[in-house]
Length: 116
Image (cartoon, rainbow, N blue to C red; front, side, top):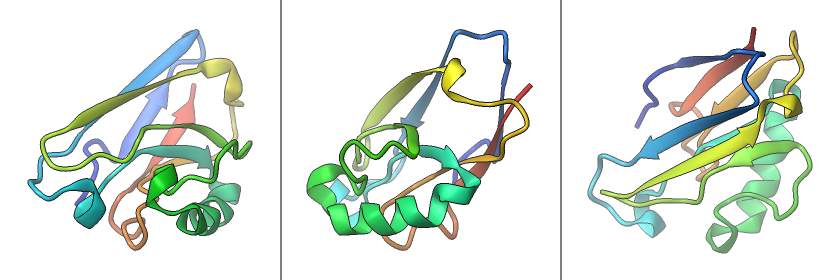
């Protein structure tokens, strides 16, 4: 239950950036699902709380949450998903994180995302 890598640097010269999440486990999404959510560090706690309230039907991400830069769907063991977003949504110098919004997973499944 961890991401590899723990830090991602997005070149500001890129127009779009993609992250592929591969779930190496065997359990289904309902029992041990994972996703990747990108948000400003300052927004993380609110995104996680609202995601938990949004439940599994919404991939533990509040629908149309403007604080979320991008996110994958919730996947189970053996599955993968890719998110692609416009780099223009990120501001150089702003602190961003990527994390799993499945309740309880943030503690181990998080990383730092920067624009340079």
